[in-house]
Length: 384
Image (cartoon, rainbow, N blue to C red; front, side):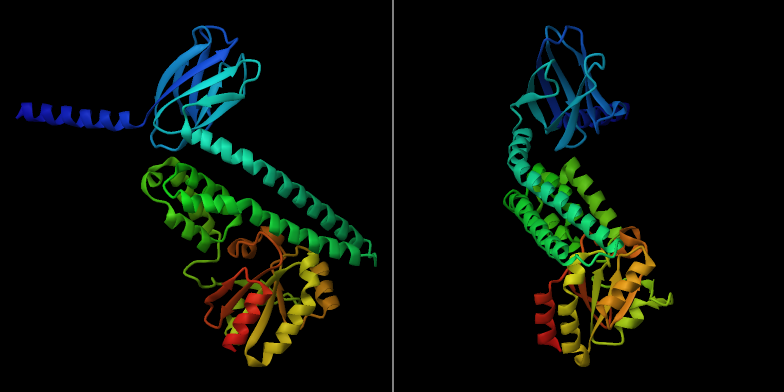
């Protein structure tokens, strides 16, 4: 009997050892001008408590093996802090790779024999141009919106030029976002079993709608589903869903306040008509104010057929909000929690840009999310 126990124990240890060997990474390094006996640290998550390997150099060279709990993970390579406190980050999987660098230019390095990291580097180098153009466009938009707020605070009548500029700037940002992330989405579709695809989807979560994220998540298959990036992706999606409206495609219970500071149950309001448009806007949002005449035209065109609008403001100043409603002569119910983009409503609806519109039926089912005027009118024309 003892012999059987020993055999089973040895078999277990053997299988465990084999499993660990599957995710072994051999890291070789040549760092010019780095003295011998310099300690090298290999970490996960970039902090010393997650050190998974350490070694020392000999004539600027080193070699070590580390075990990855999961493939498709980022490793952080540190030199002894007396030489540098900066880290080299490498996207790694099982196998081996070589680091070539110099102490003077650390952590700039050439990573050889690492297809995964080279893939990331090449992709991101191409993306840098689009990212830089988009960043400048966002900075320009923020500057224009700042100018508009100043003109309104000073009650200047010279706002038409700035409103037009802000509308054009908003369109430019939307267009550049699409240009930048289209290659990311194409890569995921073309490489559904790549660790890098999970990384790209993880980075896009803040700007994607939940249903779209789920569609791309469903594409990922094979080895990627056993990777660290996939685990991080699932965690990020879970967090986003907790803070998002789209749960089974229905509105949650929402209560906000009207201009008379009365509590309004949105669920009760949408049951009064066949279809309701939830219009997210703000008094300081030039594009939102610019399209109000079109929205009023749409409202009066379909109002008697069972269409309604509920304006949900992202303002945090009561007077600014009420003055905008009065000035624009908005005929529908307007509500707000006056917490801006920090409030529960903004988080529930995943509002990251204005204006944003949702179309819902009288049961609270979401018909269209982040919908355009064209999409909304097409639906109303076909269903009312």
